[in-house]
Length: 485
Image (cartoon, rainbow, N blue to C red; front, side, top):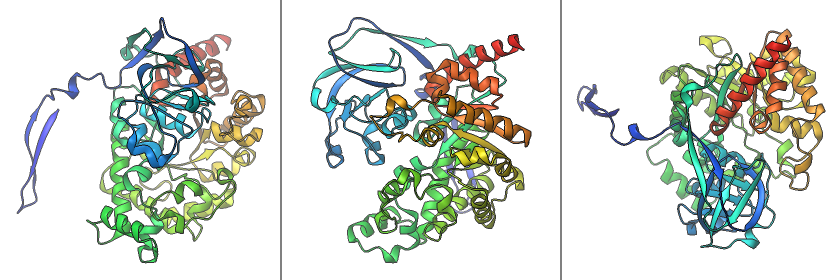
């Protein structure tokens, strides 16, 4: 609907003055899924790991350094070495993304899935083989390997009927982070949002490190001070800018899920990513390995970030209590010990987010082996677990998930990882806690869906482009499991 509003300047009353069927958005196929198949094509230029299942054509725009992103031509195929949060503004404008480095869990892969943009990562030599203005076809519809073909290839696109999605006992939910694209998926019959990432809103809508807002008078860089002043010009209380903008951004995702749950993962930036926020370098330490450093729960009670975490909590409280999104639940990432959980929950309680009060459920990510080993202890403190298969695989097998050289060894189906997953499901259920999984493995590997179903997983959360495939895989697995039983 196209709705027009007016507010009385004297009484502050709000009126709807017009409502009619919207003439553009109502005709769009929001949430529709498509199937792609490749036909005749040109020479294969480079290959890598495919992300998504789409095919597209376009002209290459080679950008090697983030300082040159203003040279990107909207609608082009972005070709670069690697990406980080600074690249997101042009990733949103790309028709496809191709990188030299990275695996299925790299920044480029995760963000492109969220944006619904086809990507090919870990190509190795794309920035040397491809050049700007070159016409290419990006094909992610041929399995695990993505292909960059010379010229415009022939391909077919078929609409998939989401009106006949199979019913499953296992709840299939969505992974979402970008409020601007969340509304595209409202038609999908998902059981809610199983993983809403806070980082996207912070890095793209807020852009300022929370400590830089809390201690603005300490900012030494004049250029940074000026930019923060501009962003927060409407706020006398600069920390309130963080609270309001975070709540507004996340509300768009909560609205898509409502009344189904939206499980919000609290911030999980690594220190190098926090440092890239405005004013962040002044408040973040340098770490040799941020992936297993000061991240997640360990920050929330630490005096170096506890005040920043309190701002996150206030935004969640605003979402639930003031804006009415009581479907917003909370999830704590990278929580290494039960004692750490106690400290985090105490900080949350101090900001009005007490587990069990007003229906608030609090979950913990299961991504550290200690979460499995001490499952019963964590289950006493949380309502459930969400298995982060990327980090759990990384820490179980001892593999840097961003390593190109080790990409072939990174496999969620490895017996050691499967044992971890089966163990946490069994032990959590005995303790009365729910278990879900958020990751790409069930969509990449149909047999993995059966492993999860047979283990009794309660929910699986995937990116929207994988929703239908995972639904099908789970339905088939549930049918086989019933026949065997």
